[in-house]
Image (tube, rainbow, N blue to C red; front, side, top):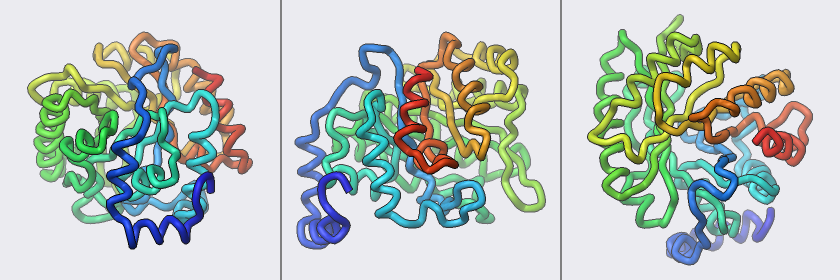
Length: 293
């Protein structure tokens, strides 16, 4: 751990809970987009949806001490701009002093638990716009999965639109991660075809009363030509979603490299692929991603 151990972290949480707000108040901040115009954000909001697996390791993310160590290492590498996480993880990182001069993005809706009957009714159970503003955080992120056969998707769309309005009222950017999704044998699958990603971008771009503070967080299609056409759908700035790339990291890196050349693409938001690389080298994976930018 970079600053204090787990036992010390628990001691602070149990005896001085006000320390979280104090750490947030004194945190050194930076602009969302730095001098090079690019962003590399480490994502760590998976666990709040009950997603603990990485590849074939079912509980890889369940050890919080291990996850925090990996996050602190990733955030210490040159070229890493910040982190995306839920309140519990960001509070830990605040207390560890790992968020100085970093972009901090709060995860807003984690109610659509993986595998739940209500998964598509993705309620906003995380940071609110007022929370992010009060903590001095820099942006928010929300997940928008739309299933044309599930009425819960409409509730999520309405809540998403109002969350974007709230963020704009606080002049805070919000990263919208849209998918067209469907259930197959009871399990939700995101459609990553070029046609589906294009439609999801078009829907997400038109939500709320203003798009002035809206960014997109989009998956990378397998075909570079398809990705170029997909990203012509909107003028909103976008970052690429890394996802769980599996064992073929080199192929994933090449897809990212090609997509990063597109005019609306401003950077990467990657979690498991960098925190839990197949070769175990977190620093090496992060440095490779930095090199792509």
